[in-house]
Image 1 (cartoon, rainbow, N blue to C red):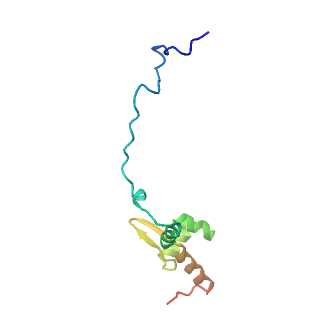
Image 2: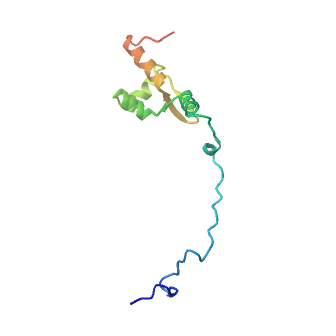
Amino acid sequence: MRDLTSEPSSSPTKPNWRADSAPQQPINRPQSYSDSLTFTSKRARHKAQDSIPRLLTTQEVATLLRVHRNTVDSERKAGKLTCTRIGNRVLFTEGQVMDYIYNQQQGGKQAA
């Protein structure tokens, strides 16, 4: 039978993993932007999230409208569907998509 009170044998194939062999050092991580945001309440956090509109990609808009993404691009280039550009990315807010749907229901007339 094996003696459990003795020190574990050091074998070349198995490392000796003892909990007290090396003290654990705390990991110093750089503080990220999200860590630096502090809100006083859940209501304030919810309000901050509501102020930023959800941005949709061309493919997501195409899926919502049940059309091909080329149709979304054509409507955008024709000026019927407005977009938001961030860098080279073409993005759409939910409000822009809703305005497009409303204009299409009105017979495709542009709102003044």
